[in-house]
Length: 127
Image (cartoon, rainbow, N blue to C red; front, side, top):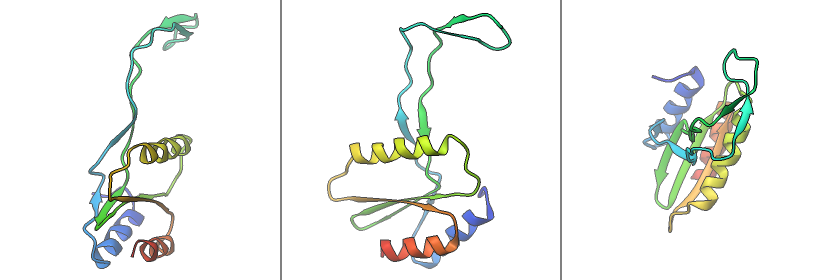
């Protein structure tokens, strides 16, 4: 089940282009979780007083909408509808992850798709 009509259209176009797209099947850990040692003082919940917060910090993860693999290429496609304020940070962190985790013989591509026209441009680059 897709989250938007644009994702459905992208999926159909990828199939028509001869690809076997994977939808939200691979998740990447961009920042590992950790237990802090430096005290952080802030408000927790409804408490108005400063409280030392030493709770474990959860990891930051990213799941691309689509991944397609061809000979020598691994393509990540993010279908963009509404953008929230976290998108920009995760995009930078994922791009950094791609730079730091090369696979020998594989070239990475990363596309943000806002329209079917963008997808058609991306397909011409991939092919």
